[in-house]
Image (cartoon, rainbow, N blue to C red; front, top):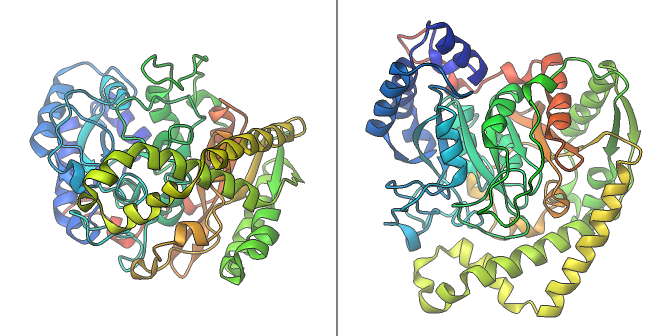
Length: 473
């Protein structure tokens, strides 16, 4: 069997039992990258020799951490000591960090092997931009289509079996959007659960780091290595870390699940027009997913919140103000170093006032309190993700991130853990919903995601490009 078709959990068991070597697994992934990534553009740097050296070292050592011998990728905003980290920008095209991001240090300590750095929208906002040094990644289900962003390369590589798992970042949906369009699992943990030290920021109060994987169980394995306090991240929370895999079950008896329908059934159309109307296939898939959760023993109730536009406007003002403040000096002194998309979007922050930012932060507090009260009556909530299949990559508008409804951004505002899970297909392209929980209840969110996943077959379907290479299997 082609070992690249194994999940992290399956590969981990095979390595522990001695039936699979970290070297063979790493070589198989590197072979796939060499054969397929010319079509997908998911990697901007492949660390072949370093990966093989690490794999040989893992093969010689006893099985230790939860990711022993598992090859992964990092979105190219994660700093890696001695390895180029560009943030997808000409500004840092030759940047070689002197230290590792805390997340990569923890993954490496857990036994992970780095295959390379993966394509990102410039500074996690400016894409897909064909004027940048690296071509935008392509959706593995149909390479004419968009994989979403900004963790594009990471999601594409996982979906196409070019790595076992990857790290993305999420300020308004940049983990969950690519997970949805690429048909994989993506988790935005609670704000403060996973360190952001050593990761290029976009918005200090909205940024989250998290994993992209093929299954919820794999997500739980990566989170076991990632979660925990880091004094170098000012937002890091010193709270206990549970056993994530132990929390996974196949039944949801007695669980109370709130369903946010208003966002996609009413608010999106009311405020963003008919272009934001969910497709008929998406509506059917979402409703079927709800019935599946009920069949697993959960009790579903509708949840009503402030209009979606209130959440989105608040998120966008904060993101633009903080993002512009971060890049203002370079925007003034070296604007030629930035791509058109990133510069045009973040430069809007120059027109915001201090009063705009303060008012957005005040509104954020009110919306966070509103959402927290929901959990007086339910254990988790579910919401739409992208309400249709991925568009063609050449039809993604410059202002699309502001012109269309986002169902992911509200939960950056609240800082809630949110998990994207596949729920179906339309025109051969994946569809997904998201499961959102109480602060630091990633275990509860993944419990629901895992139970749903095990009751369905969507996670077993792979894009044609992810099939085993000739001569394997």
